[in-house]
Image (cartoon, rainbow, N blue to C red; front, side, top):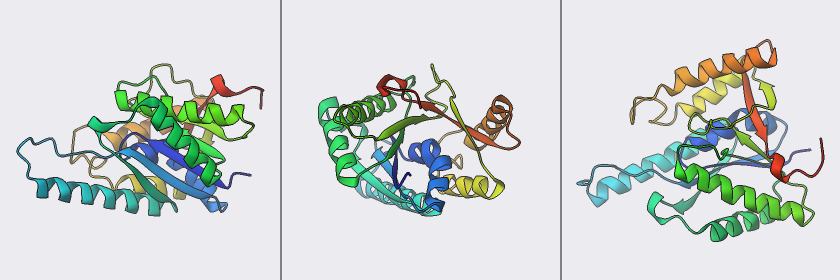
Length: 224
């Protein structure tokens, strides 16, 4: 039984997109769910004042909290920003210790086939940490969620149908983010993930909106 589950995203919104659909289901069963954000965004305006940058970060952290609460979970920021990421060894060591201390049963994170370097970095660190724990006899599991920036080689393997109330809950959480609302860039997040749910529904022959996950096959040592 899954009692402790975390979703690890490179940036705000990633963790909720990757893990939100499956974690809201586990939360209903009593699991402790945490949305972990590796880095936080920053104002792109080079002339922005320090005060403006601090206000921006404060609002982003507030969005993290509100989004997690709507999914019946909590949230953590690891304290990194884009230009001060740790080495892979330090990053994976930190995650391994966290997974051990928190007795994590299941981790959701980015697939490696990404256009974004920090998504790849996060994938590598999480996978390395889980692999080491598995080699030590820990039965922690890992799956990769679907993100529009991580689709190179992504193979849907596990499909989960969302009920209407679950779709509403997930999207209510995602809408806490300014970027999802189209206030930061013009990518049509809502339309994309709405349509992808229909695509996965057709693939899986489900009778409703469906999300997909990919197994971490390189660290599994037996069929499940």
